[in-house]
Amino acid sequence: MMIARVVGNIVSTQKHGDYKGKKLLIIRAASLSGELYGPEMVAVDGADTDSGIGDLVLVIQEGGSARQAARCGHNGPIDASVIAVADSIETNYGNLYE
Image (tube, rainbow, N blue to C red; front, side, top):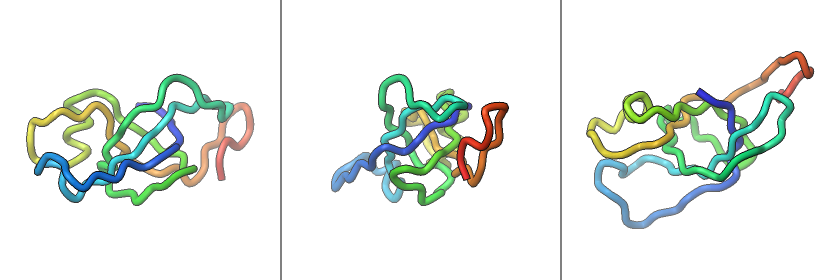
């Protein structure tokens, strides 16, 4: 599991039937100090969190777990799934997000 920030949305008028009704988000990993790092990734809003740009989220990246969290009911490929929106995160660095 990782902490990430939503940096964009993907709007798709055509997509595989198993993904209909699922929101696709562009995310980027965030360190505990709040710095973004690594490449952008596409994640399915698996928990129907209605998260948007700027939100800090928890993401599952392992294929089987991400697919389960997305509740798509198929074996299609899912690399990452958003499972929660963070309301606050407290660390040794202080409050990362409130």
